Length: 528
Image 1: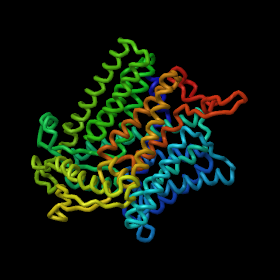
Image 2: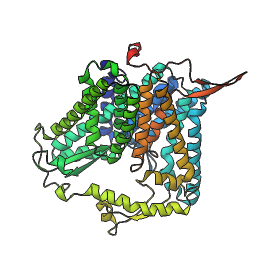
Image 3: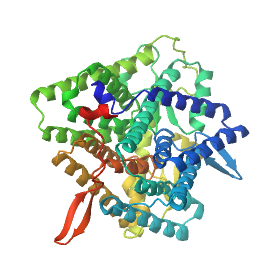
């Protein structure tokens, strides 16, 4: 088991977590202050310099920010009437560094048709939706609606980097670091919001809300969980956008367990890691992520069973999974009931709504209220779409919106129906382009499995992560969010893409890049 953990972590992981903690402390100190420009500029300049020296490290830093940064506003600076977030600054820095390699270092991107053609069609669909949106709808709304797709620009450094074993290792380490940070910060917030005084709660809440890192809501359900907890009948739900990274990392770790079955020497360490991940998967209470885990986990189970697994190995994996889930539930329970410090009584707090709080139920009903008007809007131009920034009016049951408009009538261009959103704004070309990408990943993952590639565990694990992404997108749009789009790009170096070389006797297929060894399995991990 220790060898499996070394696939994801090393001695620098603790330094990385300490650095992320320091970054968040600095962000808290300078939030809504003119001094925010100091760390912002320092980080952007540093990333530009790092990228100019190492494209893979620049890309890794960009991916790390996407995985942990929520909406990309951990640190903001004001430029005129606009707030420029840290994600935008890092993007600009990485693109400048990429241009340096392209123009000065003469590094050329390598076009791999199987890998890159789906992105050409995706970019074409985004271009179509942008042009239509800019001509039909508000320019500001159209730009705000489409700017997340700029994340696709990271395909350029992906194509320029020579993906050696060490380069892949850097990217995988970054992913593991980001998932671990999100998991730890989620449980930390869970504990703080359950034990701080009302004033302390508001202080922390102001930071995570304004930095757009997490949504923290006071709920009185689900009833079965509340009944397990002593004391006043309330607890907090902590949801971070970055919990998507935890969900996909959970699938990747499970894939490592399923395909590296001969290396389960020390189950305690891995059980603790899985318990941490499962605790966040459960505690975040995201139905969309649960659907993603169900879809990705189901395919992963079938892939493992196909990989000549014995009955004894299946039993060992099931025992490990059950123990990890039980530890996760105990962890969540202890974080709430531990009396250090004693839990405060928030019954008189203005934010407490007790058993009358049905915010999540109203959110679900509002989502269903939105669907008919969306389908009607799609029907106006079902082939080419109506462009980014297209607005739809519907009746919302959300009490926050009804406080603004008593009738509940609300007009927006941001929707929670993911595939209807793509269809409405990019038409059938958008839907087909995203489906092409999915089929490409499924084909590459299946090939790695059937050909018993040495590192098929990571190809299958990331394939299941993409399946989870597409499943979660049904109700929570992530295919138009930098987190989902970034993950689509992140997985590319870990597949054995094929190209074609011409010979006198015809066209021969080969694996690209043939001279580069993929990430080692647990048997070869010591090479790191």
